[in-house]
Length: 134
Image (tube, rainbow, N blue to C red; front, side, top):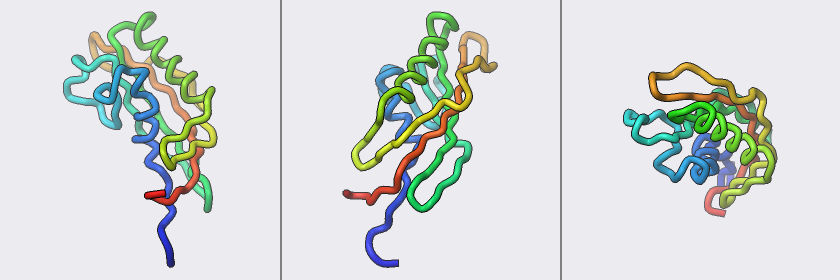
């Protein structure tokens, strides 16, 4: 193989960055649940759970969890804001082009811990290979 390597973007990190403003900043998004979650609410966690690729596109299946202190005025509207933000506009972060994001499982409440509400939704993000540094 000659020439620079073309790679797929890290969709966990990319989607976490896209959600930062909705959560209140980069300290409120991530790929892991922080130990001090109760002090960082609201929080958005992004985790890839599978997908496939061809020679050009990566079809990432990604779970996005939203955490907040309340249901009706906290986690439910946050999860819907995430869904609308990701699925209704085109996204590009530097060399990363996201062709499409579809919500394949709508936000539903999931158990977590007392005082912390959680909603989980599953998305498919379709991205292209890119050349790092370009």
